[in-house]
Every structure is written in structure tokens, then in C-alpha cells.
Length: 104
Image (tube, rainbow, N blue to C red; front, side, top):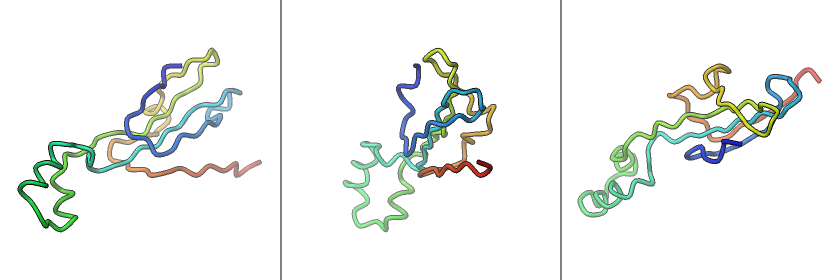
């Protein structure tokens, strides 16, 4: 389907966003820093012992991962439509998602 990886994801939801009868896929991501960066962990361990956690966190590189939206094409494939749907601004950080049908 072409949606096998989305970097560091928190939540994935299937719902028919464009009301075409097919469930689309929304995936939220969100971390300001790449806390899995092994080089930074090693540098902190060897040179910055005892740093306050906020200063320690600032040592990590930025993690620019956007949330994504995939439109179901109806043929077992998906198209990345995050920008078209206004989903996944570069500076947005999301750790989850809540969905509701407000008009029934």
C-alpha cells in the first residue's frame, strides 16, 4: 500500500476524511529532539556528566518529522496528501489524536 514507514509515530487512525467511502490514514508524529541519537548519548555520557535534563536534551539534534495523511485510492494503495489536507506542519508536534463524528 506504500505506507510501510513513517519515522517516529505516536498514533495511527483510519477514517474516511474525504467522504469517498474509503478509510484514509492519519499518522501523528512528534518529538522536538532526536533522543535516540547514539552519538549524542555517548558525548553526554563522557563529557557532560550531571547536566540538568533540560540542558542535556538541548544537546540532541532537532528531529524534523511531520505528521502524515494518506488518502486511500480505493485500489489498495494510498497517496500522501498531508499538505493538501493541512495535516503535518513541520513545526507541529503531536503525541496522539482524538476523533469524533460531531454531526452524526
